[in-house]
Length: 270
Length: 227
Image (cartoon, rainbow over all chains, first blue to last red; front, side, top):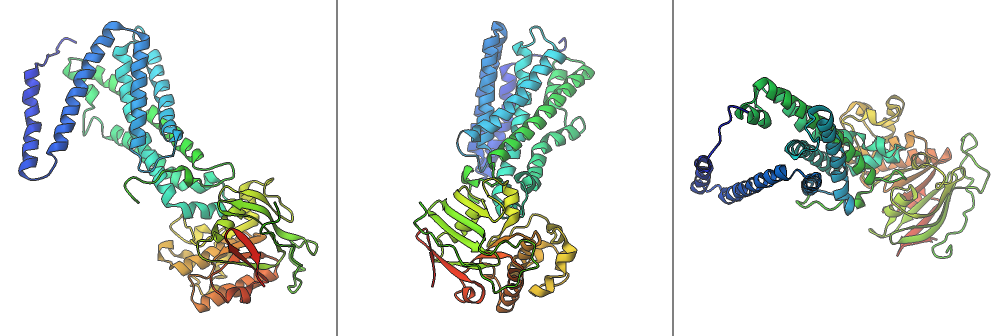
């Protein structure tokens, strides 16, 4: 970390001027975006400043229990986010449980393997490594799972006659829902596939850019980035698969019925 | 429990010749036996449909005729004993049950772009299209090109293709003109003669007279024999 240039708060104030300019444009052009822009900007500033102080003290304390507690909080928050991003959700506990459970199993397994077998910090759970890594893995798994579940629930609801037509011809629930399962899995996998395909040409990944800016050799930063992308891809895929099949299981029963009664109404209408 | 809404055993109807039909059971054996079926506000209802018999279910809209049919094929949670002469629903897997006791819902469902792949044997079934006033080329068409009535007649052929023992029909001719209605009824009569049993929901006041051996009326969750 030799070529690291520290920023002053004044640098940030000047940089934020560009965003303020956007707000002014919005008022001038009557776009009506200024309020949302301001709230989002304020949230970002407060959240990041707090997390900065939180991480600083976590790194100083080095407690496995505190680290685990923060990881759990991140996980539960991401689970809530998965649920809120679905137009139609599974009713009751499982509406939260399936997405959060699938994400937890996939993200924790892969992060722990990544830490203990590949990055190998000392100790392996060290918050400086484990929390940022978990954050990246969680964020991507969260996006993939919420897209997959949203697509699945919307299409199963809309295609009820097509699914039941197959059931009535003697198809099993898995056969009858296969075309819609495939569609849901595809939309869950799409963001990670797209970002892998475009990375390095269209955009430089944020983590890699950060490392390069803080003085790490680009080839070393690339190795880190590749490792992280592999972990992210693996956990997103695993999480999407588990969540989609968990949801299908819940939306059907042992008598090969479609159980749309376990789905909530859409919040934005049909 | 069997008291409310119970309909007695029907006499076998012998006016159809069905000696060559493979699923022929001793005279009097009911092909569909429904006992104490309960679903939501329906039932408990009990009734039987004999081999080669056509039974019509009538009743006001929203009384639960479709709900009753869905319950028989086990598409919604329900309680009760339902069996055919050879198969107990409780002992059979749901897919196996639905291959024996078929159902044509009021709204037909399609899950692929083209008509043909929805059928097990598009070539053989395709030969039946003219008999239902359908274009002989319709198997090669896209589903989106079909009218509601065409979809419904094709869905009937698809349901018959798997050769169920009993077929439940939810308003099979509601979307059809007179000529197509007559064509559908003629096809169903041939299948009845071959031993297929039919339970049909209808709002056409004359259809039970044309098609059915018996008529059941559903109201306030109870089934009553008419006439």
